[in-house]
Image (cartoon, rainbow, N blue to C red):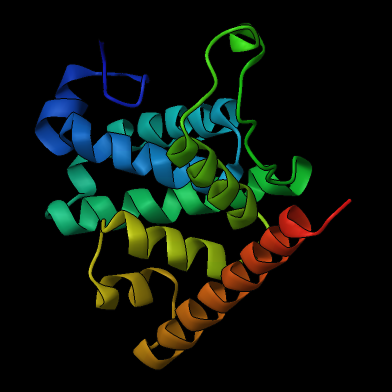
Length: 177
């Protein structure tokens, strides 16, 4: 077992033969975007990677492995979110309370992540897959069982919802108290 970039312990065979650690890190980010919780994302990844390892012989090529992994991560995250809805990530952990303040760009990324979790499915998955650049648009449409027009509409709706949430946040921040 070795530690990959996402902090998960993965068998060397799985990491080197099928998924480089950079790819596993991107899939972890996908799980994190869908769950909003590092612990839940790690649990989902551990379960899905154990299942992948037990079914190695079924994969024909890299695209099918990645598609299978993304589909199973998304399904597990959706199951997880039924019992524990996605939550906006916290900006600072308790152990850094007295430490230095995060830079402005970190705060902006945090606020974006916070609003991302207001998106419904499949908008959240579509936007996460699109911006993580794990798959082509055609592959994303196939993963989400949509045609290209449906994916385009879903991505447009997701962006619009996110823009509205961010505009609302800016209005609240800029309004005098």
